[in-house]
Length: 570
Image (cartoon, rainbow, N blue to C red; front, side):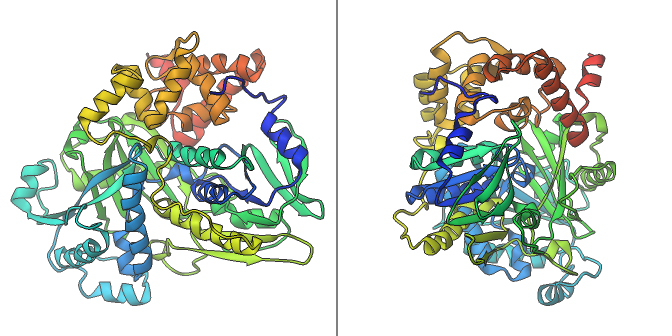
């Protein structure tokens, strides 16, 4: 178990990469698809270096709707291959990552019987951008029947069901009484997407001694000496040579290619925003289900319970990857209007928002195609210039299909290297999903045997899955004290520094934990985390203050949370 920790002054992993100066493959971009490709290549015994200019899983990967879904709406686009792949991967993730991926009962409120029956075929054939028309029960029934044929996984996933108004309101009494029907089916949610991505990454590092992952390292150029990398922690630059480069930088793929010396116009992402509400009445009204429907403007809407809060999204707006994505006040009002449409008797206001976030989807360039009809499928572009390594650019991709996408992209790289696949990743358990207890009784036994059946043990189990046993053993091996109540302790922070490459307070608040997402962090907590990290990362008092200010600014500017104001009102 790791006890030594790295520092910004002498970061062992960066120094080792610099001294080696060469690897077989470099993957640029540590979102979920870059991480999946990294893991797949590592499992084949390929020397691979993963670099990310920010923290791992901090871009589009961290701005998702927390869904692992088959994409019922893709049927209308005629993307049957993508639906089949998506539901196969969804069913697989429920088995190989049960610590983070959970079944999600999903209900669609329906207001008519035949609405959209004439416009839908035109939208299917032409991807028209005309005025959207709400889908009635007839169309939804056809779609869900098709969806069942793709997604039932040998009968393990229940078939959809329809209910009329009376029975629907018996189950969900706060729904709009104007509904005529509800349709209910099953998809899945991912409760901690950033932690799942980190689990995949750590599995990759463990799979092969030649596999290394570095955060806060930016690819800034490509020349005869190799890929030029900039260490954003120290300012140092160095080169690493490789036979193949994979550009998996998501919405920023074209910008990365530009930095590497080639102009491309592959991407055309759209912004998706969400809000998180601390609203017990709305939470109860969902009945533990996701409420999912298409609004009158054609946008997909979701309202669902997560971590004792209610997540509401999403928008689909053209976005420039050079600009930071932000959830605007107009989008917040749009979400409030949506809630009022579905649950007309439930009042919401801005004081109940504990977090808001926005990200850019890595969609392909779509010209005049309406954003909702832009394909969520992916493709792989290859470039090979004389005297330079082959560069593969990933265009598109979605959370649900990350394993299959990583395998596909790795196959292209293996062909380029003249290497053979030696192992498949399908069915391979991920991180804390190994040995995960399947029943409440088994869970209770596991907790008692490994981390303790108290609040702290349950927090660790939720955060790490069965990897909590390793974390708990590390915590027990030295003096430990609370940092944020039962949610975070001093020894756990030390473990994160040594094992998960934590470099900043924001890495902990936004991605290693759910503290920001659930609104459970305040100004005092941020300072306590910074002061606890300081000796491990060799921060002086000025650096501690800078970390506190930077994290507070991120909460305020990117997530609409003013911790200083909140502290002043307590």
